[in-house]
Length: 473
Length: 97
Image (cartoon, rainbow over all chains, first blue to last red):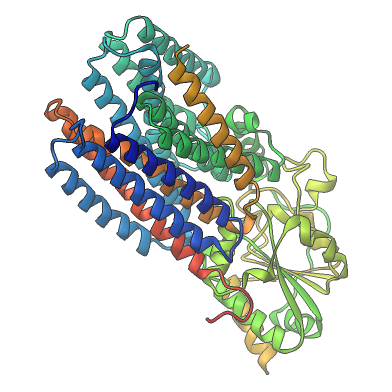
């Protein structure tokens, strides 16, 4: 860092600085839906500056880039695949896409680490270089396989249920300690190639084993965590290469994933460590017991489509509570059509979005945006929750746990303490549900048997369309 | 500890702090685009990948580097495109359908 830089190197470093500033400004613009698209443009310019700078560095005095044909081919294929993934993946598949691209990110970083080791010939690496490269390869490999596991679970290739076995946490802990130990050994003996590749192999295995026990319901947190790992791996690359733009981007990415993960955990009333260790097994086991059991206590109040339509016709205010079930059946368009008719009747329609609705943070907002629901009609839990008491109808579409009053009152419930949407406090709560069986979560929902609740059974999309045509008459 | 490490840690923690300030202001509404966005930015590892692929350290390095370039490019291009695609859908009341 004390050496004076050549003119070319100075220019390249300045380009990296410009890129870093553009990335931060881009993130800042993402704080508001009005300016967000400009933010993307700024970050794109930043990426162009960083890549151009690197290629320039490659042809400059140092001549570090000498083989171009591979680079050009890889850039072209990567751009083609990226364009396909960017333009044609349906919005419901967004979590899968994000998981897959975290895998690509981890793979890239891991491979760069291996090449660094090969290039520097191991023994010549400084303490900083070897320890950073070790961390980079371990984190990169872990992110790669962990993300593929998350992708497999979301896509249904691997069971979404938590897979647990005795001594799981101990095994994982030993592997983490082992990996760190090997990196420590590499610091003293950078030439031990076997240790280096063992670190990579342990990373690959850890990625699989760490995600295996995590259940489908905790996927949002896992995706955030993998985001964080991908960022930290990139930052480690920055330390290894002495490249600040990599350190900065890695820190931004690592921190955003961490922050979102914390928020999601809070929204589920779970601690981070709770998600990572232990609690996964407990919840589904409780589910298994209640599954198939007949609901006891008062019978739910089942209404016909006509009755529910009458309630909606009389309503002056409606809050829609959408769940992921609505999104997969593409019922969000039917919701939107119904809302249009209600609004034409002078009814105030708003949407209450629970933080964990959907399969990743903010997923429900994207799905509703796709159905042309204006975003100023969408409200977060903490903003809208007090308004339910003054609302005529809460229309629950495909949501279950996020409106279960047991989270407020029943200490023995697995979801006790989770912040919920107070749909039960509306004058009437209309719940659209396929049948009276316990839902995916398997937890009985006492909202369904409340006296002010009307259950309308059947396919939500069809029911909503029937509501719309009934109201148009 | 080397000076390079200290210097790197300064950069890392200042960036993390800036990131915290900026990212915590992103509304829930935009969290999915945020994730696609940071995913695209993490494609900055393309910088390292280019150096790895272009080096003259043998075929293995070049091939591994080229795969890294491929993977990072997919993230950069796909990430930015999909972020913009999502953001285009977010419309305020009265916005064009």
